[in-house]
Length: 66
Image 1 (cartoon, rainbow, N blue to C red):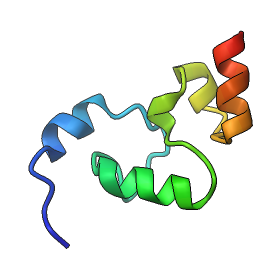
Image 2 (tube, rainbow, N blue to C red; image 1 turned 135 degrees about the vertical axis):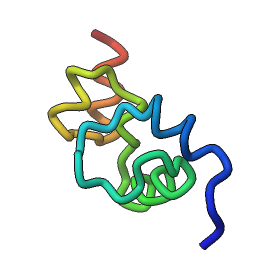
Image 3 (cartoon, rainbow, N blue to C red; image 1 turned 30 degrees about the horizontal axis):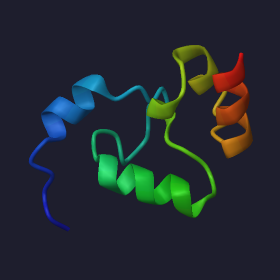
């Protein structure tokens, strides 16, 4: 797998609170993984919502309307 040229910048601003995430800072891998599971990555949510690990499209829409 090719090394991410932006890993340091991405990791510094990554909002994921899942401490053992192997995709932390690797945005392309993260987005691909979550979309394949019919969800969005943690960076699409506020910190409060992200901590609940409900990354479904429905939760995203609900968070946007509140």
